[in-house]
Image 1 (cartoon, rainbow, N blue to C red):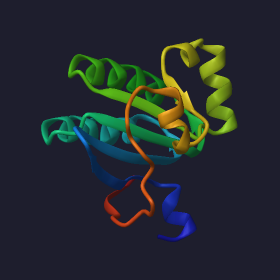
Image 2: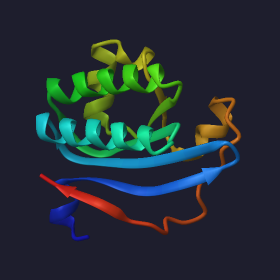
Image 3: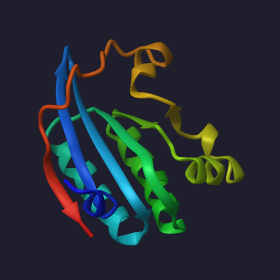
Image 4: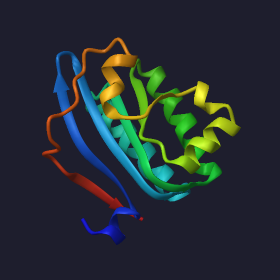
Length: 141
């Protein structure tokens, strides 16, 4: 995937099965607006139907988040909680972090600076993947 493409996608990085958990790793890049919000909601809904119960969304390459992207994350958080699942946001970019702090949503979401913090800050016995081996479902804007 070249640099121009990465800023236009939501991609599934890796699906892991660990103990009783199915971990879905997703990455959002570029401008996070209505189009990507719809795609991410769809990915989450399908993944819940397929048995995923832990969602890790990497936002390090999001340079701008529209209100529709922020609203989508709140809606996704509600859907995930209603399904008895967990959502973790990781590697949030500086502009997105500032937005979360200004809206006080940093207290609503479980935000991790790195994926490796998952075991430290949660009660889940999940270890980080040793390598990213499966790239699938690249969804371009």
